[in-house]
Every structure is written in structure tokens, then in C-alpha cells.
Image (cartoon, rainbow, N blue to C red; front, side, top):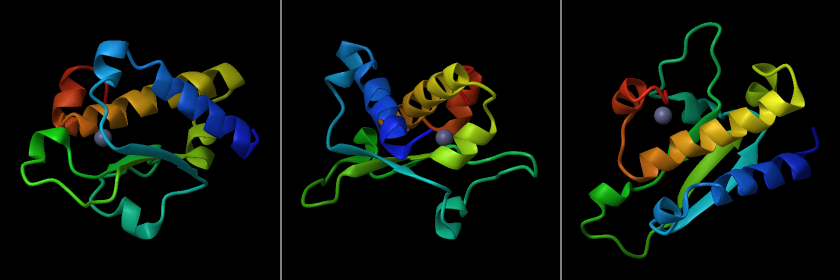
Length: 121
Ligand SMILES: [Zn+2]
């Protein structure tokens, strides 16, 4: 899939976040990279057959006590791993949507353990 198309799908996924949640998105950028960089993998427990599909970097809303003059939060989607775990275009679209939702949840201060409990790990 072309990068520009993948990026468009990522933006669409962000726009599909329900309105009442999306209204609370604050200072978030979404970007697409081929693969995670070494330092982006740090701190993530990735099994041998697993890939990091997306990454949230920033200050969750729940931790913004003295927040100002900081870079926007960043949600990164990794195109190559996402395509590697999907076998069709529809699956890619669905995976993008799930990954964006997962990373948006981190923006709202929900951690991975809780997301696993909610079945959205
Ligand atoms: Zn996560």
C-alpha cells in the first residue's frame, strides 16, 4: 500500500473515533513510519513473533498537571509491521483502526494492562 494512502486511512481512523471522545483529543499528531526505531521499541515487551504496530508518545491527559509549551502528543503507526500481520487490504484498514483506538486510549491515560482487560490490547 502506498504511504499516502496508508496515512489517509490513519487520519480517517482518527476521525472515526466517536465524537464525544474525539472532542477531548488535545494536541495530538498522527504520523506513519515504516518500522519502529530501536529507541521506540525500548520498554515494550515484544514476543519473537510479535510486532510493535503503533506507539503513543506524549503526556496523557490524566498526567497534565503543569502542561504547557510542550510538543504535541504523537501517535505513530508502523506501516510495515501492520501490513505484515494482515493478509488483505480490509484487514489492514481494520488493524489501522484498532491501533489508532489503542493509542488514543493511551492519550486518555488508559494503560496497556487495562486495555488488555478491556479486550483492546
Ligand atoms: Zn499500548
